[in-house]
Image 1 (cartoon, rainbow, N blue to C red):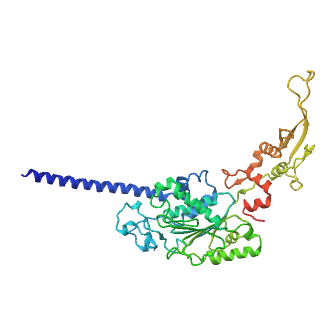
Image 2 (cartoon, rainbow, N blue to C red):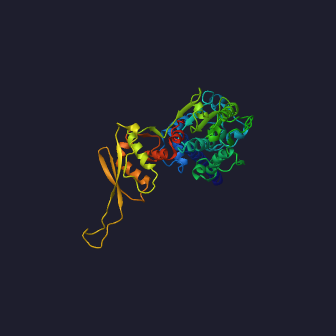
Image 3 (cartoon, one colour):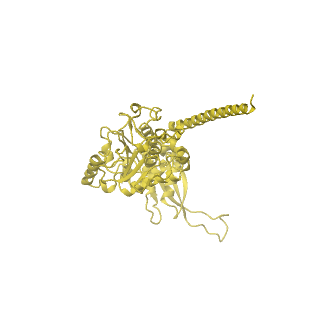
Length: 449
């Protein structure tokens, strides 16, 4: 036998075995990547936010966040049928332009979960959802609806053409800047979406295109939108964030003009498959968001900072009288903040009595004078009382806080809050006392007067 032939045959066998091992290893690695991708896609929006935007999602979600996230998660449910590039159009919906085709369609084989997935519109029935949320100002509606959801939808190819619309163009562009910052600076997102993160081919103040082809634009209320497209596509997702401001609702004419633009221009800019999300604060009882709450075809909810008021509001009336007292010199000899309207309910009184404090040491020591007059506040309510040190430097806010601490159990009883981890009952009642009940009802309770 020729030793050279034996050596060549052995080399071929070894090389063939090595190639088989490499193919097996590649399939294992690809399968692991697919598994990680599937786990990622199974995350709810709130879970996704905590995983990739932890600097925003720092507190437990409120009932509003949970409801809104559930609605948004249902807009584009992920299924393997519309994930795989080989799926038929019948299961995937409508195909979008060539610039969004996957790498396998170009003839380049790459691992499935690393491919640039083409954007697809879900079949009829899964699209065209319209959601209206009226919530308290400062309750992080924008964090979930204008940042986290559009960001995820663009990165994962769920929405190829997104509009963000606000009361002014500058405000809408500010929302877009937050998205751009995460796309460029967020390392967690960069590791998870390496083919979609980073600066894309279009990167302007009012318009961006991600590396995966998804486009996001920012517009102001009243702006001309007729005929705008991304190639052959009209917007697939429209996010409206505080479309109206105080000027928009101050007169019937302004409100009518705002409604006409919304229904005649903005809503006509999309298609029957365009998803629409409106986030708002109730500025007026005839504001656009309040109208949408009564409009057929819209899924709408109103969330209030105080969902249920405390049972004993008489104590809060007394507290508010202390908190809002204008101090001009010495306090009155007696003070009863209980309003006539609450007569017959539990009472709460403040009695201010001047007291003399004797300096330290025996009172019989000669040459030792008493200290300056110091007053003490006797807080009486619910058959108990507590003394609060009081002098000319004690503010009404301090006295009110002491009163609350003395009656906290009774004053908290019955209260149900939307987001107590962010705004507790005392903070909200301070806002109500400082800004007035009309402003509080509008900005925090979704009940404009």
